[in-house]
Image (cartoon, rainbow, N blue to C red):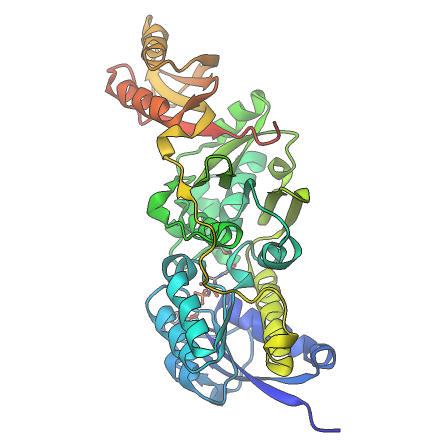
Length: 440
Ligand code: NAP
Ligand code: HSE
């Protein structure tokens, strides 16, 4: 019997995720090697700072500060890009693909920005690109869409795709914890991006939504073609008011396709979900995704969406796929192999036509006639009020006014907001949240 094939693995990036991959692959190597029929050799890793103390032990000779040297090294069969960013990460990814290597990536920002180029480069040069860890941490949602649900078209996919934001929301909702302190804790736990504004301003969720939309619909939707709103203006008081109304608040990605009109819509925003909604009940660092297929109906996925271990699990699953591909060749591989061949195209739905119910919080002067002025602005835009709750505000002489609306659209609510902001009685930037009626 011939000796098993040895596959050399290079990790470009040895931070939270890179160290997790090294740690867990080392621990599970014997079992994986038996199952895959190859030897897995953790050969090299790159970092920016060689002097930084690492939690995971690595031989000094394996470390370099040059990720491109790993990408170009012909002895490395599987290059894992675990650095983040979109400049050097792109160079590393393209360099490895150009020599026909397999690249495993956790980098959703890179895929959103350069996915089309990456897939085309892989195809042109016989390279392969795997990216299970790029969306929803340890949940195998990429595999689910690429393989398990391939029979389906997808009228609706929605869910929580950012662990940091869900962790922050949960701590604010359950423990009244202050936003800044919880964000600092999410960073310490390894959930947040190096640039945390990617998480809290919604961009990370938008990058992931873009990846899912591409898998499900074959269209690259850029973040400037989406509504993208973050969580930084939501307060513990919003959670309390939402709960009074029977809702939880989650930062959601929502991807809907109207097949009759051939329109696709991708958006990211904090959303009020009815308490009974299954996604509304997923808390902490967990992510949750509801996928509705025209053949299967609705399926639901939940698991840890960020952090070292969950993400390493997804990266190692790609390494296993890569090993299977390299051992058996393309014919032995699975459906999941992606091509850049154009699929039936659809257009993007005009954002102003998106329909929703809304939650609107205003800080207003606590004076007679103010509610009537607010109601009059809304009436002018034909936005119908469903409920009003008035409570105290932080500022003296002010009140907090929370209104919910019947179904309206983005054009009308946008015009309403503009006019409300112009009222002298409105003291602060209004907070607008959408109400998610997904189970109707
Ligand atoms: P991280 O802890 O900041 O690690 C980044 C690693 O890359 C570090 O080893 C860093 O070196 C190295 N690096 C960064 N910029 C570099 C440069 N210009 N040149 C050379 N080396 C560089 O980040 P992470 O949390 O592991 O995330 C890595 C990737 O995984 C990102 O794309 C992220 O979006 C994605 N991801 C993260 C998670 C998560 O939960 N953390 C989950 C899913 C996906 P030093 O260590 O010397 O600074
Ligand atoms: N910062 C990301 C999150 C990491 O919190 O979800 C996982 O992609």
